[in-house]
Image 1 (cartoon, rainbow, N blue to C red):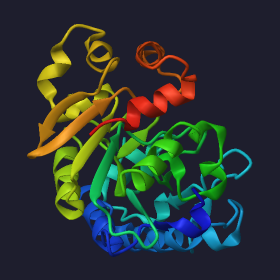
Image 2: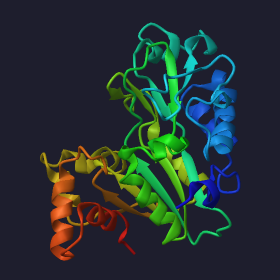
Image 3: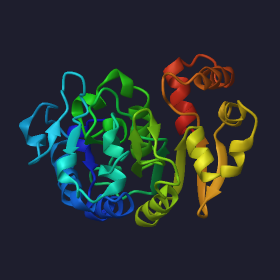
Length: 295
């Protein structure tokens, strides 16, 4: 799929980006930087097609861009100086911004240009991940960094990009990408006692109105169905290594899959099962069929 001509990114007809920015600002105590989040959406919408990661167009007043030699996903850094100093969850002693690798992936949504979608697919992954970025800054990206042309073409995206393109193309769907846990900091996500993630997701569901929810990984299943997290170790792999685990959340059909990370050992089981059912498939073909061959 040619993203330069065929894709609309964060189009306000599907969901209003200012509304999503406002939701995050309210629920994550980011009111003092709300205008930065709104501006970031405008930039992602305007620059996702062909702007290089080191283009000066990505910059916003008072913010920084991570070293693009290491971070092709155009990380925007909001320094602690732009936060309200009285915001203790972010700036106080032991606050989030005292940690390294603090990240937020702004939810994004995509659709083929000129398409009236027959479906609305919400893809829910686990959490944003940041590595080797300094403390004192909140680093913004998007799920799988699809806002960055260079990162879309990165080898790490050879699995998830074809899945999303199949959703848009073969299933004629608008696709909304988000994380169950919105904040990542120094190797871990903020827990539920710090942020009410469920209320954020429920509001996202209201705004996007999905036909189906696609979840990736055990943390998503645990968040949506807390009781299953008490199962013995390895239960999640057994639930999803042949077919997705099917459930309902907020009355919406929900399919939970193994996470598409290349480091996920469960995918070896998935591939073996798919090739047994469909001999002759390559590994990539088997995984694409696993993630997209549902009705």
